[in-house]
Amino acid sequence: MRTYTLDQAAALLNLGRNTLTRRLRQAGMLGPDNLPAGAYRGGRLLRVKTGTFRHPVAGWTHYGRTEVTDAGLDHIAEKLGIDIDHLPVLHATRQPPRTTQPRAGHGAH
Image (cartoon, rainbow, N blue to C red; front, side, top):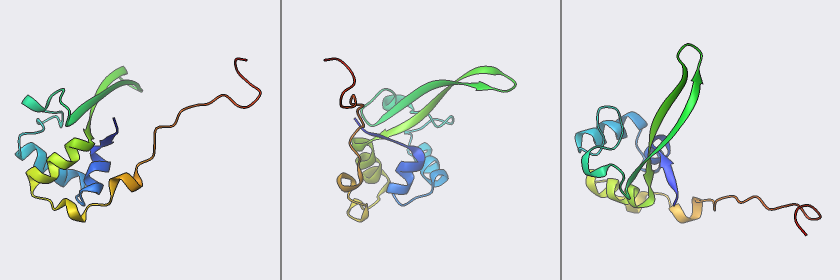
């Protein structure tokens, strides 16, 4: 399932990232940490991508980043009163997931 960062989702909804996150917090979809709130946790609309990175002072640090699914984009547009008829055609701009294929002459025979 394709997901979009909040930056990408904001652009698709013709909003700025800060405006989108503020409105999602006001609508009760995001908590103060910009992670999904309440019923939106672990759902089909919003996902949390987790990972770690090496911070120069704190060392290895965990993070969570909210991402929006295709169904989430539709839900957000409806909930925030955004006319999705003016959204770009998502299917035309989506790229299929890249899969790595062995080069000809390499790999298992």
